[in-house]
Length: 180
Image (cartoon, rainbow, N blue to C red; front, side, top):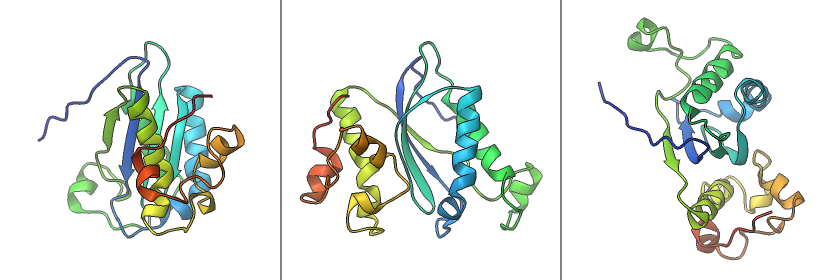
């Protein structure tokens, strides 16, 4: 079994990519209310700040900042994955290996995590979150994707509503981030 090493910085800011097991699924969008409620409940028990979040049909990207002294994002992800899975009917195919482990066939077991290093790294990862639906061809403009905190950030004056329309390469990693 692999020994996954994860960076743990108390009070740190992290970028995550979390995937469904079935990469053809639209489960996250069709059950967005259950996902939102699960995240809300987990945040009540284990607070964290959502810096950015985008939910696509079969995966999501997000940036969290943990409370000072706290580095346990793994427990939060476990509770989000478990809580979301419990809210859904058992209709997915489950492998023998997963059945033996008492697992459902909804999530990939692991997720990708990156510790944000500085303001430039932060900006690049926020931009990556927000441009992702456009890069995947799900919308023609970033503002058209409803499952994103982009709209919150536009409302807060951090992004213009037409952000990402002129230059996809710039928006994907080189646009400046305005601290609010």
